[in-house]
Length: 143
Image (cartoon, rainbow, N blue to C red; front, side, top):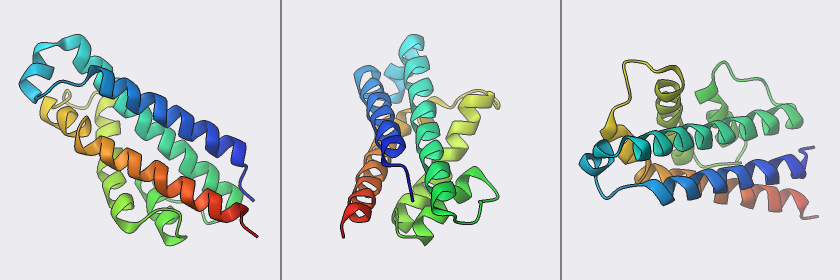
């Protein structure tokens, strides 16, 4: 059985990270590129938001005794397989993991357009993940 306190803590961390992205996002990629501090803050907090989701996924998978995924991206597919999140959310996180890897490992620099997309449509994906996991968690508590 999943430890609710850990899931709640990870969802709170996710909410904090997305709030920090919202606080520093810019209206477009050019404005974001012109403000290196904002670019760094948005990139870093998006990366940590995706990581919080990955940590949460790993926790749920382990506590539920589901087979371990072969990759970080597959963790989200595993959650979808068990009805924790939707297939659409799992697909969005396949792309989010790629973004996280670029930021975390510095692969060929960060594309400002990708960061701007993360700070707009990516926030919607993060919010949807939180809603879906919260709904699943609430359903687990129902008799």
